[in-house]
Image 1 (cartoon, one colour):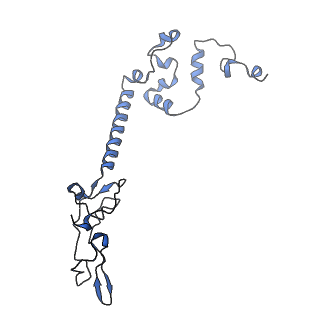
Image 2 (cartoon, helix red, strand yellow):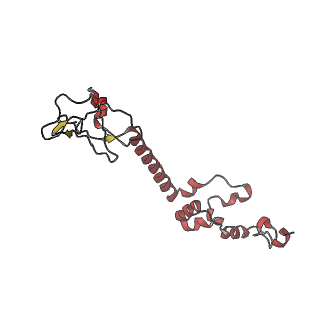
Image 3 (cartoon, helix red, strand yellow):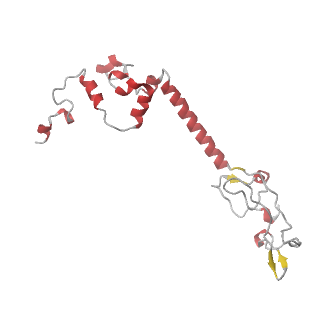
Length: 189
């Protein structure tokens, strides 16, 4: 490998890498952030006193012996590469694909007839055991189906109708819906 073809630094977080890297000869410039090869020539000749001079860096072998072409173009063109996604970018794409696939499967399960079984935290306490699989008896979100479940799970808000559903079976007195089941005047003492 010629010295000017060796990359000067690694770019581990770059999304695109030179397509020749897999063959062990990546270009020195590498692709731009959008994945386009920007390789052109080894130098950008400059004109001094009516004559063109090579400006190739000493890191890449210094000025070439041939020098620039008569029109001022560099005589050493760099072969264009076919930029490819870096390993990190491919892993990221795979991770996102797996996440959204798992999310989709979970959503399909929740929206299917298995929904209540999928989101159920387990068996109810003994006094409420007779309500198994009758979630809407206590939870109003179940009355509106899967959309209601998702809304209830993803939004934090008070649901006074839930307390009223408890009072359909439990007699808690006049202060049943008050904080700690105690009348406000008693709490203020």
